[in-house]
Picture 1 (tube, helix red, strand yellow):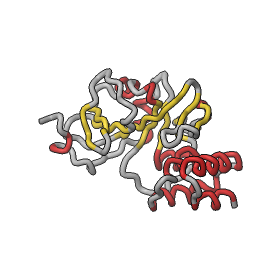
Picture 2 (cartoon, rainbow, N blue to C red):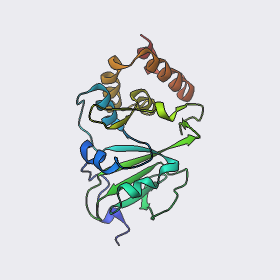
Picture 3 (cartoon, rainbow, N blue to C red):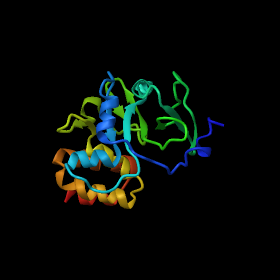
Length: 206
């Protein structure tokens, strides 16, 4: 059954696309997109931090069909909670419960790109973790020296702060010296609002 990825591609079988390939595939989109995850932190600090099991690209939910335009010949799989994969049909609008899409060039090939969908209201990004955490969409990301858009480090770290893993701590340690006062204060306010008292807050305000 070609519609069942677990029979052909193990969920752990990743061959992440390079940043250059991601940029090449998404550069013609008319909608905003950003490299996310650990690669976003590396673009922010300007050097490699650690190995990566995958590569993430963030789009706004309202622009989700742009993924199918960027990867027209690929297979797309929606991650239905609590974690099962199902084919994402061409032109299908995914429900708000779906935040992730896994993409592979063809059945049986490794996963190459993970898409993350986030919310927006008019010209504001709205965090799915807490709708009180928001900011203008045009401040959500930055552009690397190579012209690659990536998620601002304080926004990416905000998501990593919910349940930090060792790799998230490594990303925080690398990014912390590069954060401006404005980035730190936004970050502290966001994690406190969304998660309550947080051990990262004291480090950010030192």
